[in-house]
Amino acid sequence: MKKVISGLVLACITMSVKAQTDENLGIIPAPVSVQRQSGYFKLDKTVVLVSNEAPNAATADMLNAYIAAKGGFALRTTKATGTQHAIILSSDGADQLPEEGYTLKVDAKSITVTGKGAGLFYGVQSLMQMMPEKKGDEIDIQASVINDYPRFKYRGMHLDVGRHFFPVSFVKKYIDLMAMYKLNNFHWHLTEDQGWRIEIKKYPKLTSIGAERSGSIVGHHPGITTDNKLVKGYYTQEEVKEVVAYATKRFINVIPEIELPGHSSAAIAAYPQLSCFPERDTYIDPKAPWSGSRKGKQVQQTWGVFDDVYAPTEYTFKFLEDVLDEVMVLFPSKYIHIGGDESPKEYWKQSPFCQQLIKDKGLKDEHELQSYFIARIEKYINSKGRSIIGWDEILEGGLAPNATVMSWRGVEGGIAAAKLNHNVIMTPGSNGLYVDHAQSKSPDEPVNIGGVDPYSKIYAYDPVPAELNADQQKFIEGVQANLWTEYIETGAKVEYMVLPRMMALSEIAWTPVAKKDLKNFSEDRLPLHLARLDKTSTNFWVPGPIGQSDKELDGDNITMELKAPVQGAKIYYTLDNTRPSEVSNQYTTPLKIDVPKGQKLDFKTIVITPNGKRSVVSDTILNNGAK
Ligand code: ACM
Figure (cartoon, helix red, strand yellow):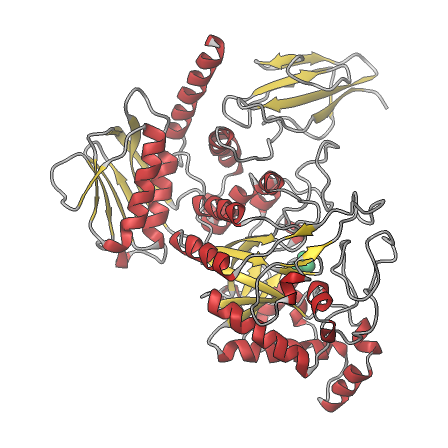
């Protein structure tokens, strides 16, 4: 026990030192400018919290709750700025700051955070991140001056709740994580082939039928069988309001996605008239014949893209307008996401109604029919004072006049849309922003959709394509990471997939390119943030040791110099092809490894955090002339 305690104390001291010596004071995303000054502000229970403006009350209270949890004392709040030792939250002069910007000044006498609304909130987030662990009865905060504001106005995280359902409590936790990292748009993917997740009062079958599926395939698509386990759940309108209010308090806009015309099997199961062929049984993936019943229309039980999509009939348009009416009451967001991706044209080709409509409207083909569909929905949404976002397929067949394009199939859609003077949100899977991909090549990675995209790939990505000229670049509103949940059944696995990738996203969304520094991010700040998370119930992917290459190394005497990727974590290794664990050799100082002539050694490591979280096993082949 004694040993455990001293280890913990040591970890805390190291963490404090790290936060204070780091050039960015431990803050993620790195601020625009940080000037370290000499001295400290001693935060103890004699400090008062000054917050004079009513709109700042919630932010002040959030800070006080954080101090109470961290320091074991809450601050007395007051409206007067006197001579006391004080933390002052103020919107005075904030109108001069850039949008969402803040300043943070720390000296021995006071801490002043200046900002308005989101700006003040972000200043407080930075202040919270700067706080080292308590020393005795006080928290010593480095004297400094920070000026900060975001690079992009749109900084998003997406969550697919269609493939798997996550309760409101988890959605709030996701929003909390986003807020810590200054992300400001939560893209809530609410409807899918495998589940409709939002209550629509006018169409109750959307949730009584569409929110339940009888099973899911087992294993990676096409799987081997079905698990026959019911997956069900939806958000009531009251719950949606609760989530929106929760997010708003954290300066996060919630964008609902109502997918159309594809990915609509769950709605079609509830109301078969929405299909071109209401009488046909469910379209079943021929590769996964075990994926549920084909009788009638069913909520899909496998993953993929299905031919049965909304028919462009008056019945469907009325249905969608009714749905959107209810959605727009619940979500104040300027943006409403209407999907538009992966909508096969097969049923439209087969449908006499669709073919006639193509002729009547003078359209060239089914792609133009999709554009007609999207443009009609856009017109309706615009008539309510809102704007649409669509996935980049909405470019095919002609872009709806005011649409914002979310570029996911690489960056090309975003480039094309910006050249057409349309707003763009970059979320290319090719650049690491699909966080349903694996985070390493290790076979230990849990089942995932495929691809290997560690956080460093996100970090390396610049959302502004070099192909655009300065005028066109202005259409890049921001960047987002997407989490599709085919293979993600639990909140713990969501956390595993998004952390630490969400932190890398925040830095490319917020920090000026000139300040990007992967080494400082990975080696100085991330270990601190992950160590804090390690003390909570939040799960995360534990990186492999800093300094370990996944490339083969050649030589007869190879030096391995490693660092823990989580403060206080231990690294264990083997050289005999066995799986490393806490009973293996512990790495403490640089290792010089002799590799016998003509042989290869497999240097395997594992990282184990103070709280027992484990990395996957990382491998480096050490080769001394072996073929
Ligand atoms: C998508 O990943 N189908 C937008």
